Image (tube, rainbow, N blue to C red; front, side):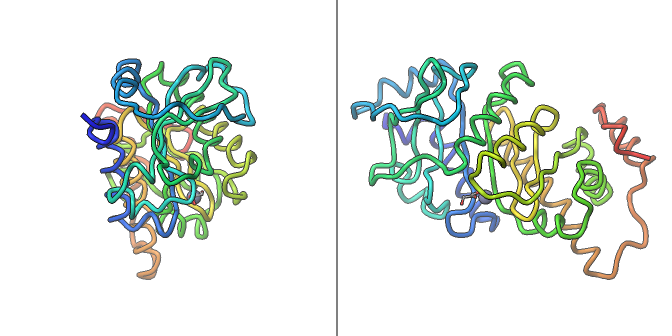
Amino acid sequence: MKMTELPIVEGLVRLCADGWQQGWHERNGGNVTYRLTREEIEAARIRLTRLPGEWKALGISLPELGGEWFLATGSGKFFRNVPLCPEDALCLVELNEAGDSWRLRWGLCNGGKPTSELAAHLLNHSVRKAATGGACRVMYHAHPAHIVALTFLEELTDKAISRALWQSETEAPMVFPGGVGVVGCMVPGSMELARASSEKMKEYDAVVWAHHGLFASGPDFDTAFGLMHTVEKAAQVRVLVTNAGGARQQITDEEIRAIAEGCGVQIREEFLL
Ligand code: 2HA
Ligand code: ZN
């Protein structure tokens, strides 16, 4: 079996293809990382054909992720091209035990480096791993147009954006009853953006980056992709209705509570009136 036939590589390739189909990944927009299980590391290790790359400083120290391996999209690579040549567009990265350096184990066969948002991904992995007792494994960043549009229309607070999304589609309070975090407009790839996101990720499994996109996490590719898709769909409805002249009625706070209760999830009550 080749590296590209491993279920985790196939899963990542499929997510990239689906995200491209949705129109969320213009040019080299977006990035994904996946934190491997011990079994997946061993399955990958026996298929490696190259010597490991040189250790490179991460610029941050995350001992809680020491020894972990991550599958990632490459910096500057286009999602559109991932299925054509995963060996070029993706990479497998190993962290040292101190969690302050990484080295390449597979991929980027034509050169390059892991995603420009690697610091944000790893900080968020560290936070979500702790918040979910180790269950969270996927970090997915995309640029869906309606969620970006929403950040020009609504007040940039966790409460205002979460409530606007919940009010727009009954699926929203069911899929993200905890709401979404929001960070302001910051330089893409910066440590400032990485740190602000990871602060929000302590409480939320998705964070809206104002005027930029969304960062969604989950235990597997389906859940993280589904969260991205559901947040974007609710934002799309909100923007469609705004374009059509504004809502005549919307899902009320009482209805949001009833939806959450009906499907047995805990809504973040402080975001309702
Ligand atoms: O271009 O999406 O946030 C990759 C990005 C940076
Ligand atoms: Zn981006």
